[in-house]
Image (cartoon, rainbow, N blue to C red; front, side, top):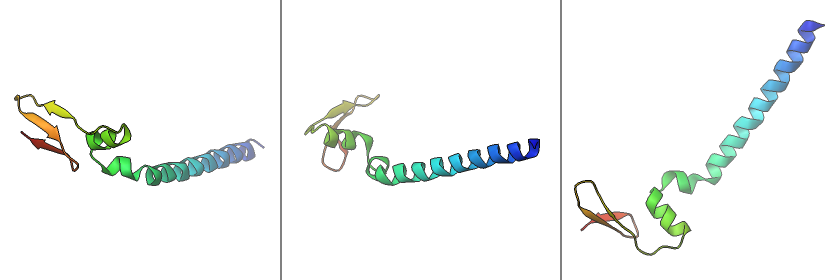
Length: 72
C-alpha cells in the first residue's frame, strides 16, 4: 500500500514537470524576439522611443540608430 502511494506521488510530480517543461518551451518560442534582440533597441521599439543616448564609463557618447548604438 505504501509503495503504491509513493508511485502515485512520483507519477503526479512527473506529469507536473512535463507540463512545466512544455510551458517553458512555448514561452521561449513566443518571446524569441525579446531574447535574440538588443535590449535597449527592443525597449525603444516597445515604448515608441525614436532617440536615445548614453555615456559609457570612459565618457564616450553613444547614440541610438535603428540597428543599435553608434559612437559619436
